[in-house]
Image (cartoon, helix red, strand yellow):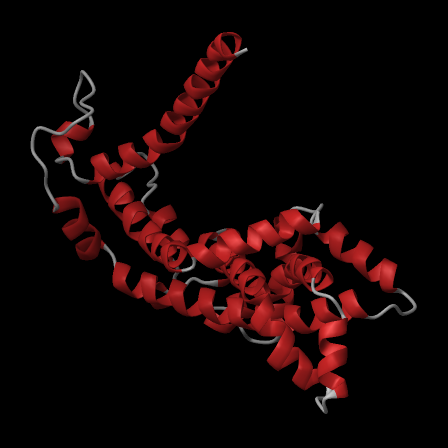
Length: 277
């Protein structure tokens, strides 16, 4: 049996190795391109390792743009919208998991239906709404839009985590004198932290990478986010690959740091979701 399983094991290892290379190579290429001089980026034959490392692309990106401002805008908007989404989704997810009421199934179906529609369909109505509210060219327009777009799916995610927690826990807390809200805050939410962390990271990454709304709502240079700034490196007749690669590396760092610090919560959250499924 062991001898028969060796070829199959070898194929699995080969497949995983190939999959790893295909996943890692684009990241490697972006990092290497950001460290190449301009003459080596378009050198032929292709150089997979630069002859000379340079930080000129990183220096250039701050000279030709206000990249530090773009990073600050992205962080502020993404974190603010994600925090609001989590606050609302915790309450709505708890209600959808614990209570049955008229229209419960219809509301859940509506939440699921929003995930079947591409986000750009809402661009025109949202633009008109933000224009009427005089919020065009403000960070608040993106915060509101991102919050509205992410609440349904975040509610679905947290509802699944709430369903995994026995209702007897808050009932016992309520018998001991807690109100339902106090039981939620003191008993359920601490247990829910992996799920909350996973949902927060999902919301943050979606906000961080969003482009269409940021392009539609923001025209002021001082209010642009990183995706908009990266889009500006694609010129009419040329693409500044060095600056774009350097900007991509810098834009990935916050999400990598966030995943590094929250790795334990993410793994626990995914495990809980799998157990529930």
